[in-house]
Length: 112
Length: 112
Image (tube, rainbow over the protein chains, first blue to last red):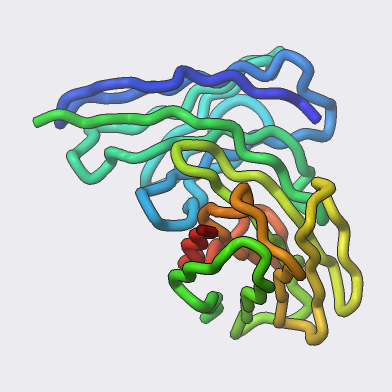
């Protein structure tokens, strides 16, 4: 399994753009990169998934460089409600049954 | 729409007692099902996953077991609980096109 490394914590202010980077140096050719968000005492919630270049949806963007050894989750104009733990996972592909082990994630704290 | 249920929501059990946590999914058929455990302040650890009735894959050796008696039912069990079994247990499902997991509300287990 490709191991991921993320910062343990990050602080930001409301209205700012937040970028969380994840390193995955030994990512395999058929691995996808997926990000989840988790609030206390809740299950994680899917944010975004990508394979290469850039993916954007209504809540976030995911930037993946050509070598795919890292990825960056970008949250535009964060609010207090974006305070949560964000997990980067590498594996898949989407059709595979075996799911991934979540690391410790990045605790994002949005300040007023 | 799909819904995932877990019960009970909270549970306090003495060491050595048995355990049975249930997870059911509605609104989908033949899902992949997963059990995770999350210790306080930690990431999620994959315990078991299942691709069909009676098919269980174990990720971590432990005193827990899982069963899938029906297509949309996943059960986590133990004959004798240990203190280290305390944690937040999450059930998840994944269906076509298999690009994300959907998590249940979780069960908070405290073993005393």
